[in-house]
Image 1: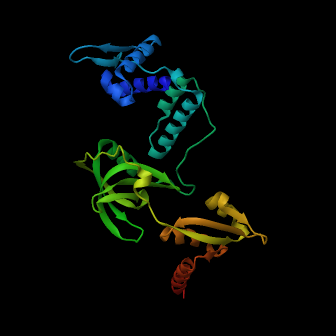
Image 2: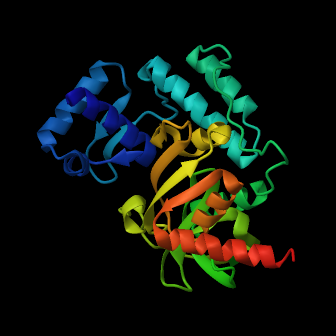
Image 3: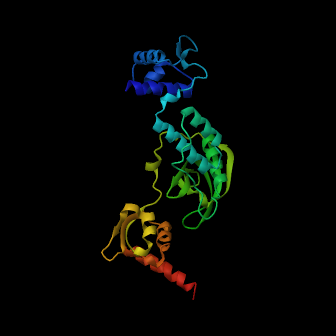
Length: 298
């Protein structure tokens, strides 16, 4: 426990430059006396940490101090490099120089066990400029404005206080506080156009926000599906271990899926190789869509 707290004290001072014993005691929920013992322990371990008394004094680290590479385990070093490769692929920025420096610092040879690439097999991903603009707006806390097409095919102009970029189920989303709806919302990047980062800033505190619990992107519906075995590769791609093989060779899936247009787009992508067994409401909606499609080809 003490070892963990010692590292946390060092990280805190690296981030805040200076603190007081009482502030650290409150932060880590220990006594001031314990904090001073921790400082002695860090100093004995060779960490250049100092405490000065009087006005303007406090606890601080020597200027230009950096953590030794031995602080990170081999697994943590690999995780850092992998995360940076993912950021580079998503953001479109070339981080090769940074990755090379970190590999040298960590004494890790070029690793090729994983490659992160968010581009499509069919065309280049077109939203890297939007991604970079949104990332900058999140860090600078600037409001963004854009036109957005929602799942009901309606276009509206939105002003949003951006919080986080989220990658989920093959797509990027912006999560933020929508000033039009006065609520938290997800926005799919591929549906955004004419994005602008405004000079208008905001100071809303998101530090305590639990994004996963604050808003549900969609209500789900339980569906039972039967697939032709000829598209087994596609079924396993979509549903993983939810797939069960029937005696006749067909594939059976029972899953929770979004109860909106995403559901029908997904089901229709399987063509006539899928049958919706339940619920009847989904079967009826599929019939309506197929009838409308049929009329267009009369």
